[in-house]
Length: 346
Image (cartoon, rainbow, N blue to C red; front, side):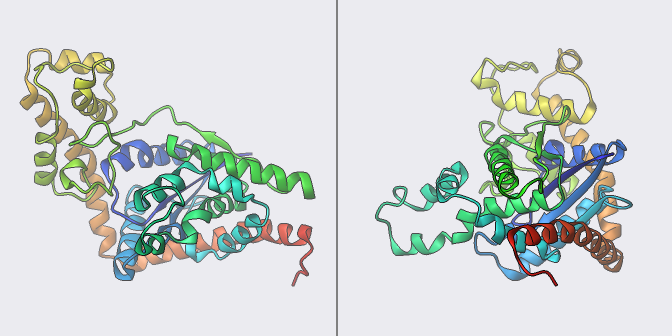
């Protein structure tokens, strides 16, 4: 039987080239491999752990859904849906929260990092407005993430370094529940794709490219116009060494390493081939080549996005059907859980 892969992305910001090269491109590869059944969703429930403007949240959610469809995700046995359209996510999260220890959530490093951003010290005395800025959902959302995964009996979860701890918590919850009530949940494994790359900020190559970067020159959005993309690449931080060479041992080369990584993933050339190609050329030539490669890589995606944006009924039909399919899978798991913990079934 095919293994199930599950992945969700929050709708709290616009998608970047880092999202595409580091994850989305691999999602399409996984789906087309024929080896997996893929469950992809827009994690709009997770997005409200911080305050959102309702209009912007709705627009971004639809934009990301349309981008997913423009990439060719979903269809057939593969689902692409909004998390909030499948009510079992929230219901199972409550149950799993009753099988999760407070200390486990307290140890989540992402929560502690975000707390420190608002607080002067972790649970120390702080200003009233800072306390109000951190919602309980920020503390408990790893439980919702566990529900997302366990609902679909996922075998594999594409996992970045920032999510390994959350997946480990999911595994612990599943094992704990199974030990109490018998085999109920499949214990998921992390999936580390062979292809892909960790794409860094164009302005601060020591930080991951992020849609939340306050400097818009640091990231490339998937819907940026070609001239905007070229300007951002040409303004990317490099160094004064003057050669197009990859060197992880030299921190001064972080900007160049990042551009070479981007070019390598897009063109499928290895680093030695790239160094040979630009052996007698300067940074201007290389940055122009990188910008052109990005523009051509994103051109089909942007064109398909524009076509789908003109046909919102088609987009709605796809995500509605996928949500129904996802619900049919999720309700089986939830009914099994409800029965085992002693709820009276309908």
